[in-house]
Image (spheres, rainbow, N blue to C red):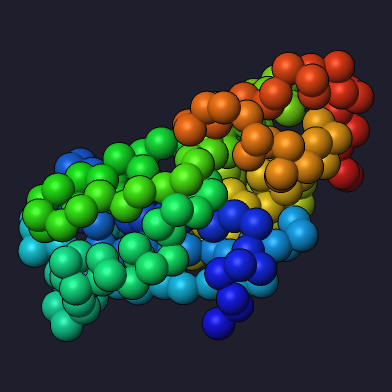
Length: 201
């Protein structure tokens, strides 16, 4: 596995068994360095919770799929070893809330991130003219092939969107992380005059 020090940022995505954010049934973490995914980690999770038909239809994970998967309390040390003190991104703050909720439910410490980057907000700043900033729309726009509602695939695409947004606004990940906010939802003001969108077609 890639050494943590060589990673610029981690991108996390989760799938849930029902509407409760704490009901994580899959987690994927993509490791990004130099604007590309260099490593990854993923796992099914047994949420010990009810599965709703809507969620199962969305991601294809059900009770039988996770019957022998580890619980969140069993996986938390691994997640902590990867993300504690690191720059972490996700597409909207749903995943951050899910991780925090799962930790609270399992009565384990919440992961202390150094920075949390909302890639959906960054996409809105970089490409305000797009009809929406959902991952499938962004993937189609930039011709990124992926399978939606798979935790690792969603994490990978969100990481690629982050890299493209930085390129679009002509700012480095270091400059972005240097902003004072712990929850980064926009670009530093210095990047406000960056060039207009030039989509890859």
